[in-house]
Length: 78
Image 1 (spheres, rainbow, N blue to C red):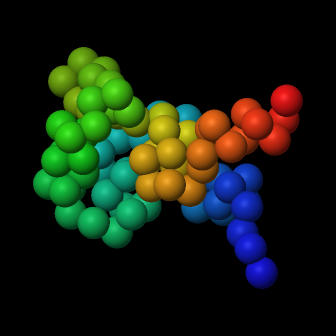
Image 2 (cartoon, rainbow, N blue to C red):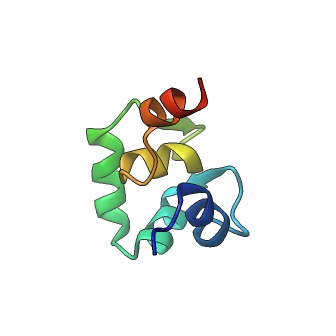
């Protein structure tokens, strides 16, 4: 059985806001906050700073973790 990106989005990210903090990403991925900060510094196109903290959109987190591929999605919807 294959799980779709929409199912992941609805189940894993349920109850979280559209943009996630470092702490929230750490809980979702079950990794240390320092590792999430390293991800933010290594992938500046996906993370953004809101005031003094890094944030990431849920969709960008899915793209970063290869759960969702926008290019394939675009090809399927055209």
